[in-house]
Length: 256
Ligand SMILES: NC(=O)c1ccc[n+]([C@@H]2O[C@H](COP(=O)([O-])OP(=O)(O)OC[C@H]3O[C@@H](n4cnc5c(N)ncnc54)[C@H](OP(=O)(O)O)[C@@H]3O)[C@@H](O)[C@H]2O)c1
Image 1 (cartoon, rainbow, N blue to C red):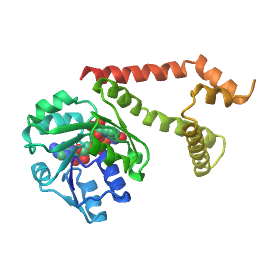
Image 2: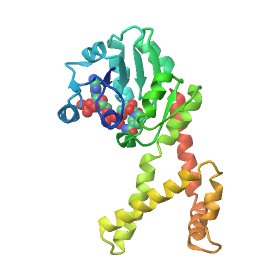
Image 3: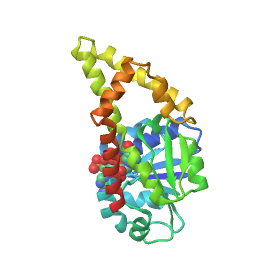
Image 4: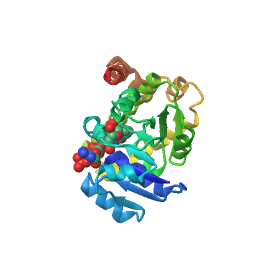
């Protein structure tokens, strides 16, 4: 299979890295000349990656095309490009919906929206796709765990939660900075905080079939430190604000 990536940025390079760590049988990958630096790095690192002359050449040469530009760029360039009839298109673009993509592309093509996240580079994490598609499902199952969603409106909720990556890292940063301010060396602080959260994430994943409220409860000793922390954060509106920010993202996604 020959793949093409329209837009060679953060998410395209993460997916490409994941592909070369997987058992997927890929003949060749064509990437856009933009971003130049990333494209050069990828083609140097992986023999099967070729920088295309332009976006059209990439589409002409590929069986599947991944749309990995920002929504603004996608809206501008897609209508000028000629896709092949029955070509498979996998869009990572957050704020262009299926109906809009179909209209912009204007050809009988199979379009699937997908939400990979950067840990796909080491083949970890869920990849929601919509609508369900057997080949795309099998593809992303080699790079993480595919979650098929039938209804596009429902899939938007997954997009909203995927916006919690940066807030999660900000939490880790705040905790590390706090330790550093108290005299702990930065590398020790960061090692401690990140490994603590890896362990907690693994624990929550092992227990993900139970209602998560039991983890919240079980991690508190009566009148203990965790109880104090969660109570104080609730009172300060920390979790309420988290929900508010999810609602804000959802509102924006629903506008498109
Ligand atoms: N990052 C994530 O975690 C993530 C996760 C899921 C989905 N997404 C979605 O994936 C898309 C890309 O996100 P990203 O974070 O990878 O963004 P990004 O790093 O900014 O990548 C966008 C890429 O598009 C390129 N580009 C700009 N104009 C172009 C053109 N005319 N033709 C071809 N390529 C062009 C950019 O090149 P230049 O640098 O030269 O401008 C850059 O390589 C977005 O729609 C985003 O919503 C992102």
